[in-house]
Length: 461
Image (cartoon, rainbow, N blue to C red):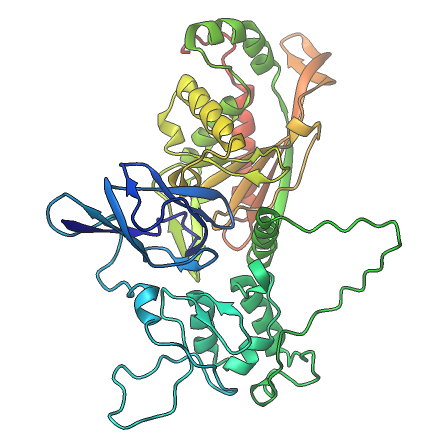
């Protein structure tokens, strides 16, 4: 019998960990290839992890609600196949040991003033006081105040010299009050300015003045007796964190143009019935917009980048995400990979398929990762324009507004005329760290040019 390691899958370029929501299969259960083993969540999507092989679950290495680093082993499947293998070639040889192995001995409470440095590899031969529990790169550590800290948080704390006592004071906005990356970044900014903690001590003094639990931050809000207080669901909390982090990360600039899409509207009205009868697909405006975006990105490839410190990462593939509204009111962004290589029929099929499965919560992890640019259609809600927030780690996002009939000036060979035209606003928000106004404005105008040059006699679908 061979042992196959099931690992936490890669969920996106900016995602380094995921939370286990539910184990669908338990130890002793048999699975077939692609059977759902567990359900996980990130700040972008809830998803299912399928079995890579057929066999029997022999070990589960992380419990429900544990936050696990991408690439870490989460379960063992025993199979009839040959030699022992890993469920994913993406797992590096120097990946940390499963959390279950680090938890063989009970962790002692961490005393104040300790840091996040790992204990010595080999214990002393003579008895020694128990050392504080620390999280390895792939494990979750439960500290003296009962809170859990992810590997990323522990690494940030160690790098910045934050003691356990100081870490315990940081307010958390994650699940069950956990401290996440955004909380750490916000705290470090306040800490650099001698941030005063809830017990009156400065951040530098906090190492010797621990508190039993994080100090609540006053909101200043008041409520009347008729006020309804609604707790955010988990996905809304994650979206909120993602949006706030984007505004912290990127200096947003938004440019606007108005586009005449009369030829597109007339063409679609003329072919939509035949298109559905011939291909079994509805033809919407979204694939037409994505087609124009993909063309413009090829003309301006520096829009198709991300930022890593002081480095610009230029992406070879054009992967366009499209924001889709869920019945709950939340948003999700499935990604059309290599959008520039699909014709309008291929884009229509991809758009319809992803949008339908997004609403049914049926997307797979790889279908919401690796996006390089995002399109959001605010016109769906009757809005004429919007100022969208960049989907990190991308550097630009396009919003298209409602298409409305308006009087517009048309230039003809007989002179200027006023005619009723189908007009639409488009807005592009971009990261001013790497996208200047000339690039952002020119790119947006090029999308508009492609839409206005749409061939109303095209028959390639």
